[in-house]
Structure formats: structure tokens, C-alpha cells
Length: 140
Image (cartoon, rainbow, N blue to C red):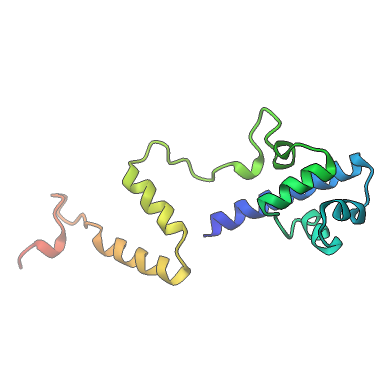
């Protein structure tokens, strides 16, 4: 879940910067941009401060008001992927089951993640005799 928040925060900051630049280039005040979009000035200001990401319909109205393409506001107009899109951990070479497990684990709440970690650690084989057998299966 933390990864998702970091990505969202990076997107919000990058988006806010691009919106401010587009509004400045259009020569509009925040009030004028908000008025053209049909939203409250306070809501528009929250977008420019990176505190709010717009819904898709609002994004389309924003593009119309600022006369800018959505790809430019989201950072897709350059040859390099936007910084917010960077994945912290490459899992391209991992097995599909492991990728699904990691995606699921990222959505868990802290207590759920702790429980999953406890179960996973309990399932790990021990390496006592070097024969690859779990120590719980040996007889005394």
C-alpha cells in the first residue's frame, strides 16, 4: 500500500507542476481556469497544490480550459516515462504466481500484511542438516 501512496504522491506533485505551467502559459488566473471548468476555485487550487487528482471528466474539462493535451499534463508527451510511473521493483522475470502474491500483499492493511508475513515465515524450510528437509518432519 505504501508503494501505491508513493506513486500517487509523485503523480500528484508532477501533475500539479504541469497544470500550473499550463495555466501560466495560457495567461489565466486560478479563478479564470476554475470558472472555465465550472468548478470551485478552491478545488482548482487543491489540484495545483498537488492535494487533489481530478476525475477523468474533470481532467477533460481542465484540458479544454487550458487548451492542453492530457498526455502533456500527465507527463506522457516526452520520450522518457514520467518519474511517477517508475516501478520501484522490477518483477518482469518472476513467476506469475509470485507477481499476483506481491500485488495482493501491496493492497493489505498493516495487520493483514503482518499476518501474511508470519504465515510465510512459518512455511519456510529450515536448513539444519543440509538435506533440504523441514526440521519439523524429523523424528527424535
